[in-house]
Image 1: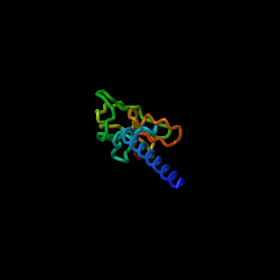
Image 2: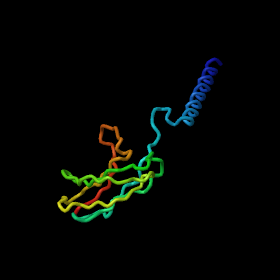
Image 3: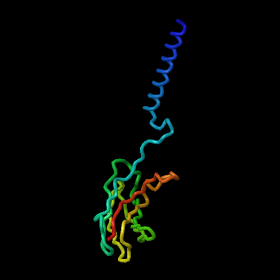
Image 4: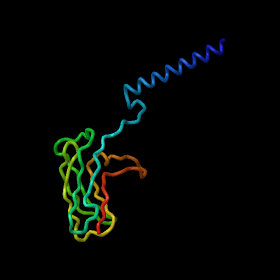
Length: 144
């Protein structure tokens, strides 16, 4: 009977510990030291997807589904990058919800091939991972 009582007592203690962890987890989602999901801007788009030097493309994003913490006057810096060459950065106003739209003209001397429109000034800039798993706020385009 003593062994059975110890088993029941152990199970009760484990059940209470699990219940306590569930309650703490519901009360504070960050209790484990892992932060809650971050608010990130909506998907960045660049169109058309293929553009010739001298032509323009539209870079835009809709509003985020969460509060980015932006206030009036927030800006992004946008540039078109190709290995070894970038356009001069363009600063653009961003709405408090993260939406924006701008026109970027591809310089006549810009090289052909795959390129990326890269945006700085969003929460995606804050990646502290020293490995290669960070994603930037960017959209792919092809310069023909």
